Length: 108
View 1 (tube, rainbow, N blue to C red):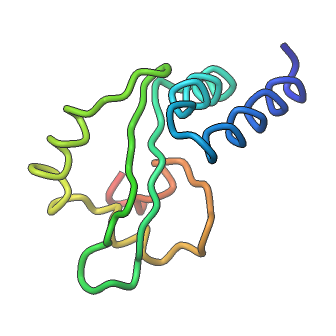
View 2: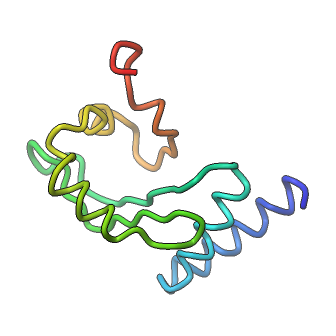
View 3: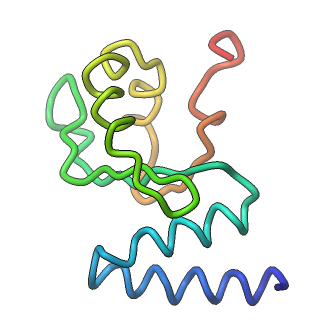
């Protein structure tokens, strides 16, 4: 499958998922395959709600499988220590980023 065809499949899948969240696993798997990654997270929240980001929606997937236990563990154990949170707050709205972009050279 070429890049344009992969993009079209992802876009169609995202449209379906926007209307019915049961389609997110399929969209996630297509994204992982197209980018050659092992997982992705989709988050929606309020960056200006105080000290912490107010999440309304956050799901993490790996090849179409939701990682609910990973999400729970992240918020319970790692979120307070995560250097990326500070950098996420500075991003413009609706920007898609790679995790590595959320660290400074020193943090990496």
